[in-house]
Every structure is written in C-alpha cells, then in structure tokens.
Image (cartoon, rainbow, N blue to C red; front, side):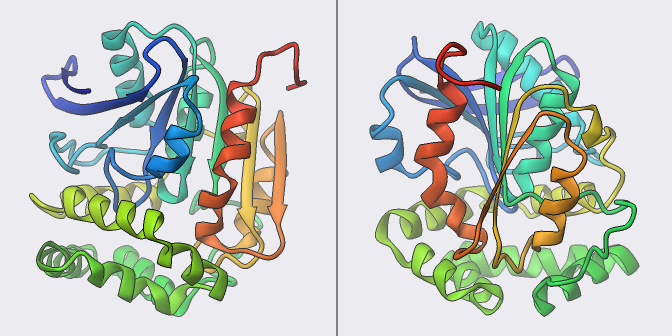
Length: 294
C-alpha cells in the first residue's frame, strides 16, 4: 500500500507499507542513494509476517519532494509526521548505511515514540572527535567525500552525471560500487534477491533527479543536528569488520558513545553483510520486552 503524506510545511512524502497492518511497526530508513524499495528484500519480508514494514522516500528521492539544506536530524520530524498520519503509537526504526544515522536521529529526538533502533553499517558524524574519519575507507569513497567537502558544485555535477547514467542502466551503480567492496559483499549483492532489490531501488530513487543523493551526501558530511550520546533508546549497532564504505573505526566510535548500545561486530563480512543479518535484527527489534533485556 502506497501513501502520499503532506507534511506541515507542504511537502509530499511517499510512504509504502508491507506485511501485517496489525503487526509490530518498523520504520525503514533506506541507504544512500535509495528509496522506499530498499533495505529489506522481499523474501525477508515474507519470512516476518508479524511485522508492519513502513518505508518512505527521503526528501528528493523517488516521489518525495525535496527539502534543500536538510540535516540528518530532519528525518525525525518526517518520521513523526508519517507516524501520526498512519496512526502509529510506538514503533521501531531500522537504518542501513546512509540511513543508519537517520535512524539514530529518530531514536535521539523521538524518545517517547521510538521503542528500539537498529543502525547497520553506520558512518560516524564527520566532526567525531578522536576519529580518523577516512582511515580504512575505499579510495573511491574518500575521493567522493573529499570532493563534496572541498567543491560542492563539482560534487553535485558528478552526482547528476552518475544519476543520468544510472537512469539509463541501474546496474552501473552496482558495477561502480564493486571496486570498494570486499569479496563477501560482492557475493551478497550478486544474489538474485539482493541484486533485484538494489536495481529496483536505484531506478526508482534517481528516476527524477539526483537531488536526494546530493542532499543525503551533504547532510551526512555536515553537523547531524543531534549527538549520538543523546540516544536514550536501546540501539542494536551492527557492523562488518571488513567494511570499506563505513570503516570499523566508525562503529567503535559510535559504540563507545551510545548509552544503551548492543554492539555486534561481524568479523568475516563487509558493508552489505548487514542484509544477511536482517532476520536476527528484526527479531530483536520486535521482541516483546519480557523476552529480552534492553
């Protein structure tokens, strides 16, 4: 089921639901670039019939209107508005990669609404003290982020050109990503279910423009608008030790600062290994309080 929700400032947010309408609600925060189709493959959705999956296009992606100059913290406002429109009470949030900081923002800024949060393969804030932010990062990723920080206009132009190429052939993004992936990541994205989900995601995310991708990149590289140490809800922080897109130092930095964190470091996998961890992550997010401790 697809909803078009109007925010208080007049923007359209496109929201899509799957699963049990009476199940445990989990709001999904997609990666960068991404859209509401990303994050949870269809076979994982089918294997969790007790969950109400709620995904939306962040501003500038898919059918959601752009919000120029948005910060990571702005995701909490949009999630609060969609939760209100859909009549949600308390809910959990799940984010992967570029979506993970947005999930943490919801946990930090909506403590009375968010029950639990899962942040998979999350980068740390760019102003993280005592963290060498680029250490362990793929050279192509360092080049991209450096361009964004030093020449935003050139960064925007490059993303626009890449988005145009991806609109013609979404598989190009998977090909370009491979240079920065581990062998385990390449195997994961080569599986039919994951490959189909990623191609469908990239096609929808960028079919209109590259604004969402641009605004995500700038938001992740600017002040997030909240302190991860202010997250008071239980957080499952998952990371692959071989990740070259969000290096393991980012995981360590976040794990040392989020108060109620459950850190999980998977030694033999990388960035997209998070997709294989989803079943266990979803079980933790939706477990009744009496069955687990926070």
